[in-house]
Length: 463
Image 1 (tube, rainbow, N blue to C red):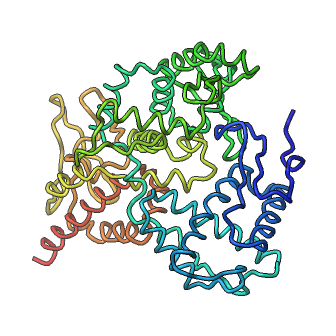
Image 2: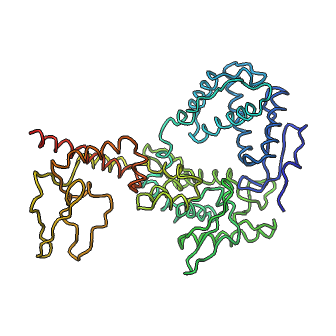
């Protein structure tokens, strides 16, 4: 039976401990004790209750917004800013808060959440025209872009050498629950909340007998079934076995119930995100998984998700396929993976430049393949010297001509190449989608080739 959180709220209290069985735990705590005065407490309680009533945001998200607001009030205290209501909050102060967050040692996603918390409550109060809220807009709309002090996706993509260390560490890891959950993350890219919410009936099979995993996403309130590896199947079966006694003790279907030794008293309980993050930190230290600077690698479970998404793009899957598999609400999240590049590959490629041929004319061009002549294939911007291989198979390297040593072009195609480059530079996102290009790495190789081709062709054309 679904629990009605609203029935458990006592507005007179400044701390609400409400039942809510999620990967965060069996309850969530809304704490208003840190707020400086009665007006702030009553107003934020009111907005929280109304948000839960109209369900325009989940209880878990509101819980995060609630504790994230502490950073804003710490900011006011540290900067000696007196604020009895939000009415005198200005754009300048929200900008100062942004720089305050950027100066703190926290991840970009945490900064974004802290900023989102303030925006949520301010915008809610302004929309409903509550007294005590600013009359003018106090956010520029560019906050989330500004809060990214570095490429978030690059920081979340796990380098190959670190991934190898993780895989070796898993061979030695004695904590079976931790080992299983990490293997699931590497192979499926599931969010940690999705893994911690897996239940005993999550594993099924398709018509061919291949394993499918039923995933319940609290974030976007959907259920999806995804094909998984044999390793993931083994990990799920292992979690079912490991959680057997705990499920009986708690009368639960959840397969990440474990014996919590650190609790007082020790007891069976669901593994929470907080406890798992602690396990992950200890895993890194226990197996001495270091970054390029010789420091302990800052491993996050979400890193497995970004790494898998990037590899999927590099292996030719479309954004639509990846979005469906990973449970993205929109292609905007998926498109972000294209920003991750391999700087070594990019650097080496730029040394090479265009690897095809540039000639004055392709008239009467033919190529000898297995002792028989095959006419070259005409392309909009040049010629392919080998459209058919020795076995008679047509080239299947879609959108790779400019990166192929068999590609030949001439001064007659100079304007076509210029138009091509102009189309890329005007809108890279649209170009990638229209040409089915999965990674920015691929796109930049094409762009680099075009620049080299145009430079050489102009030299031939103008003597």
